[in-house]
Image (cartoon, rainbow over all chains, first blue to last red; front, side):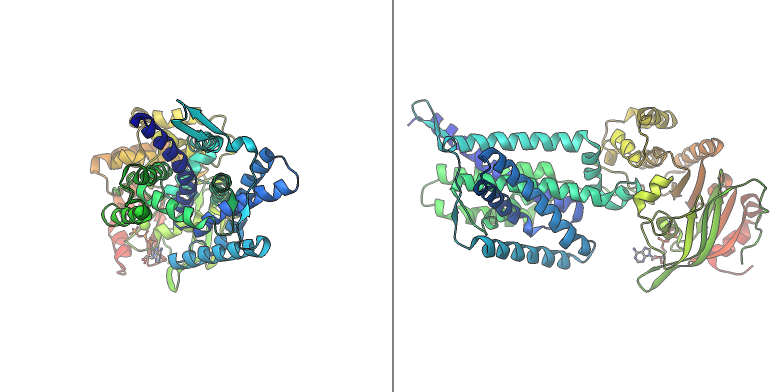
Length: 300
Length: 251
Ligand SMILES: Nc1ncnc2c1ncn2[C@@H]1O[C@H](COP(=O)(O)OP(=O)(O)OP(=O)(O)O)[C@@H](O)[C@H]1O
Ligand SMILES: [Mg+2]
């Protein structure tokens, strides 16, 4: 097999996986940026989005609409969690916020088990999504799901980039992430901005969940757990609280995981996750602000 | 306790009135019953030593802190239970202590955010030009991240950002903080221009002489109470009394 094609294939795989991590990590970072809280329930929005699409499919909606509906359900679920669970404890001690978001995770996952049982369910997708696209006599192969993942992530990121740089709400969100008190003083409605942040973050997680389920073919109540951990690592690598950092971290992590398996001796492959978390520890120790370090200069 | 109170000139309309205000941080009282007022077109200075409660006063007016007792009215409307965003919309802009510009955003974006609460934003561009005319250095740096500005430029930006709200009342918390003497002079020259244009200000300062040079009236706070108040001209003439009020000695 041609080495060049092999590398190209692995790069495509890395972008595909990195896209999913980036989608989840961005939401985690966005919420942290404004509220200074790690939203552990964020991973569960993947589950909500995927089950949402599944149920809408059962109800007879065509896949495309069920797909969009799943994203919307994820976004709405995030907003509901913010209103009912997080807003009442806003401004409390860090440990209170942490416990609240862990509690929300347990409630959502158990709700998922209650309604859908804990065993994995098939996640049906249209046949065309499983079709493989082959190039150079099959030396580069990817499925339509890979294509969809990369394209939809690019579209979402384009939307987000436009939103945070070109709209007043996006500008306000960046301001609130930087200094919540000063944001209030210029008259920004912080509650509204936080709702928008949760809607976008959770919608992105919902999208990631649907794509994840489409790739693996199954959906289960605790499906968000591993991706959340990975997204957490990605967000830390990039710089927690920074949207661009989460994006960068997501793709770095995707590349790392794919390349460890693809290019290192096969004996190393089982240690993939160990290497990833070792990297996390290294970042926490030596570069806790991540790659896109945004040091706050205090000038007197 | 308030002495040297100036006679109310007829026709002067009170725009802000604070009545019997008490504010606590937990069990600690920061403001222990303060009444003051600001009339339209006036510059009123709020003086006092570190920890006297000056910033707390401004933060309470802006709605960032809820008072324990007392009332705040702005243009005849009670505002002490309103959220900060509503208070800005009513026409109170607050340039906070330490400037608090949005460091990762550009100068132009900071100014745009200053107009965030305005219902009518059609003149936003023109107003931004107005701020650039007031502070030409901001125009030169409009695309630059605010965090990379010098301290003096950041203060200009904080002022400009507050002006973008087209406020009826401007709350200024130590605009001279940490600035070189020449920069302070230039900032206060601008404040004097604004005063000449009729902008109403409540100005918190440590710098007594500079503040009394600009203000029409002043209140001196000490540990959450008004120790002295009066016309700026009279307080200027009684500098020792002001200093004594600062330190808590009774003259
Ligand atoms: N967030 C807070 N929590 C608890 N106590 C506070 C807080 N902010 C201020 N205080 C206390 O309230 C009192 C008044 O503080 P304030 O900041 O209003 O003073 P100030 O007059 O603005 O002082 P300075 O000139 O140093 O800025 C001080 O004793 C201060 O320690
Ligand atoms: Mg202060």
